[in-house]
Image (cartoon, rainbow, N blue to C red; front, side, top):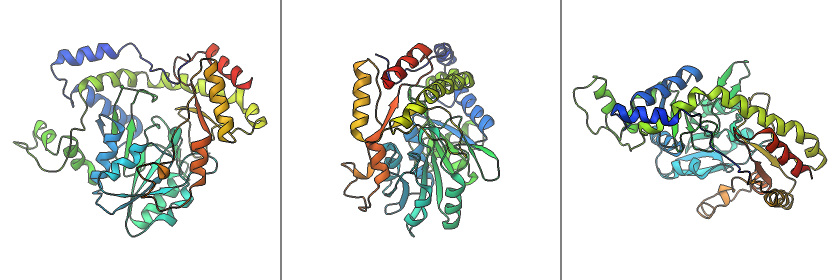
Length: 376
């Protein structure tokens, strides 16, 4: 079976884990945590980074930081992973779902303003497949209504937004806060793992406290206070040094990983674009304001039957292709809480999108075999 995903190991992961264990400091916020955070801040221009045990944790920290209260409203796409919504539901927020774009599964930026009310606290911009939302539009609306923007950049490491001013900014550096994932399905991984980026200075000190279970422990170890205690709400969001050590091995190889993944993505695109036109199947669209970090390669079929046939055909040939999100506004948990609006594009992507295998070790003969079977 050709898997949908295969985690790539650089070979240094266990060396760094062993080093972390032998250092006697494995509970977190040690050498490897600091190295990872510094790399992301320096390389991508994030103001402050905090590693977390998952992207879900980073989103939950964001919800606490912007002080989500019961009754607050948060706008986000319905076509996203459940963690995007759960982080705010846990604080009592009402989720106001937006539809997707016509040309891409990401949020329809032009639909956001009509969803804003006096209760709107935040907009969550999900960079689907690592491809940027139109952040100029989103930030402009947020500024006019004085609401927060949180980037769900789970899939968007090493991807950029090109603004109207021509300046290229890393995804995760534009909103007030952002969340990344290093789950084993992502471009760089630590098994589980995530990161919160803080771009608004007002959140920096409190984020560190929430990260450390609501204590000012980090300030104590820096010698800024003579004792530490419980000063705010928080939880155990800080990952162990073992997770950070694993991640550091991936970070060291991020450019090589990206080059290989982009090459795999391009082979799919160049060999399937004409076939897609002939069969009314849409290939991934990269807007002019976005770069492509090759997180995934997907097909958007003309209907659910066509998608089912492709998945079945590939499975018969030992190739695992998978669909993606189900519409959150129709989920068993939230359908009775949704305001009843139809979101046809979200439902279309839920029914018609299929993801093809894409990973570092997917060699030319395998990817050409997949392409051949799809075309057949």
